Length: 591
Image 1 (cartoon, helix red, strand yellow):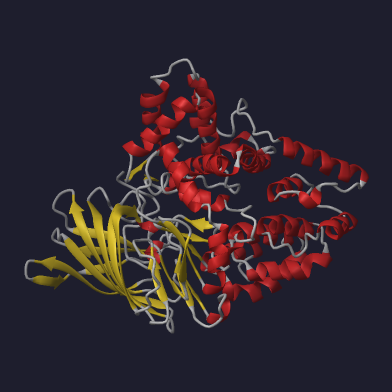
Image 2: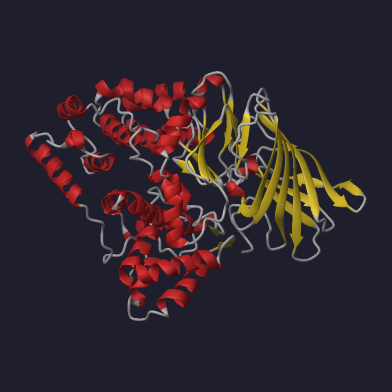
């Protein structure tokens, strides 16, 4: 690939092959300062190196010579709101270039937490979130997934804090104030990650464990005790785990995502630690990224289905192997139900919201369903060819493209060479084209069917029609409750909500997935009795998947928007910059 529209870098001319970081964490100023030294591979003798930055102050740039270092000319372009500023460095084909810099306190890829925002309440916390293009806010880098590099880092921090990165960290919390880590495998920039806080380690297996604040560590280790088994079943299906260790870092609740697949160190939300393992599919998903995404990577964000679609498919296979077929079917059905959002769309809207997989343009719609189509496509291939054929094909895909960045065309060529041509007459060209080239979900795609969900649907319909509450509701799994709420009307009467609340105590639930659905319905229905707990939920939790739907539901009315603005004002200090920007977009620029 020679161009990524989300990056100023020019990888066709020069690529970073190794990155050496010298970083100092300043919690008082909320900045990272230091240097990033790029080892470069030039296509031909070059005169310039272009790196991505956002709100970074560059203090010096030097190039390596046989006698040491020499200063290089550089310039920062005027910033673009989305892409930041191109850093152009004049070189004479230097093999190493060192950029000295410091970040801004407002770096979009970093969050600095006061002690009061942590579980312990005594020490500060900092963590990064580089995906999709936020690495450039804390490291000047070729911020495109088409460029992969190994890295090493030396980090200094207050000695009472433990520093971890997406690298080989070991398993001991030795708090020295000076840390050295190495990532020997080549990764793209969005997998650069760092965290510092009051962190301790709890093992979950020979190759896996949990880092968390002391108050959370043992609970999280118990919740994620199946991690080693997940690793074993995935290796049996799709080949060896190639990253050494697989550890999890449980972050404070402000983390904006369910998980982030940073290699060797998945960052995870505490909202999945609820005591019954019902939400650990998030961990299965992040582990699956060790094959799809981290090992074989999309070469631009326009092909995100290659990361997320494949990962969702592998996640479901992990869940099936560890927790049973019925759980996997229910999880799939929950995801597929979200395509109901597409039913009123025009053909033109479908092209925007859910184009063909081999489309060449970004999934830039509002539904976020692009990766689901990719996962569904792979499940369809599995069903048609059978696992005895499809599983070796997928393992061969991971082997062939290991530690490489590819695009949809690369995958389609591999598909034809290693599955469609060797096994003719199993699927038609028209069927494959419906997935790869046409918008929407093909009409012949079969939906996952769960007998338990059929019973839930019948119970919901009976309740809506007669007022008779589900007799087995108190013993329902998380998945059954999600189905009940997902397919319920967006707006219910206050009497109906009171009835559910009295019987099942949904207001105040500790389950974030149930909470976001319940509070969204409560907001749309103006169920004021739930608003105190709703506000507490939005204030405690910063995971975007959980809070954004509730803000959207509140913003549907003037009164709800005013209430949401009040809640946001109180919650904002604990939100990640990514979450803050997303909420502000919902509520308006004045928030």
